[in-house]
Image 1: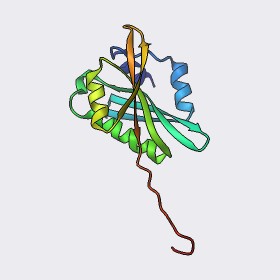
Image 2 (image 1 turned 180 degrees about the horizontal axis):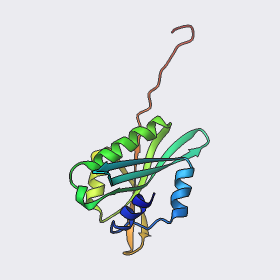
Image 3 (image 1 turned 90 degrees about the vertical axis):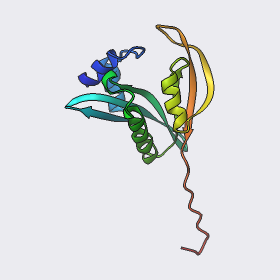
Image 4 (image 1 turned 120 degrees about the horizontal axis):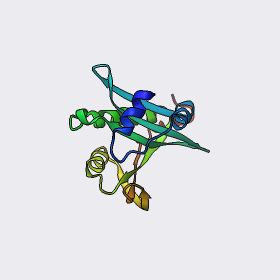
Length: 150
């Protein structure tokens, strides 16, 4: 957990989660994906699973890639793995917020099929910035079995 906290603290624009926050995430219904390079944490992605009656929705809490490992597909790989794990856990979609000025992240999300759904004004601090709300609906495999057929 210390390596994740250190990487998050070293990433501009990321809030510093306390150990209590991390423990809350990890003890709850969360998916954590960690990428390592040379025995160091190169990046990670965290999603919470929100269980609403009748459905499960995943919410991206954070995706962080160490500066030395950016622009080589690691973020894309982390997110694809997180999407697969979220869907395997029963989620019907993944939601997220992203800074309006974070063009690289927005391009990553759009490239994976995320759609913009709205805007939260003045959502972020240091600096104050709007958040774009995005989500990706997972394909629902429906097996229709007529009565009496197998």
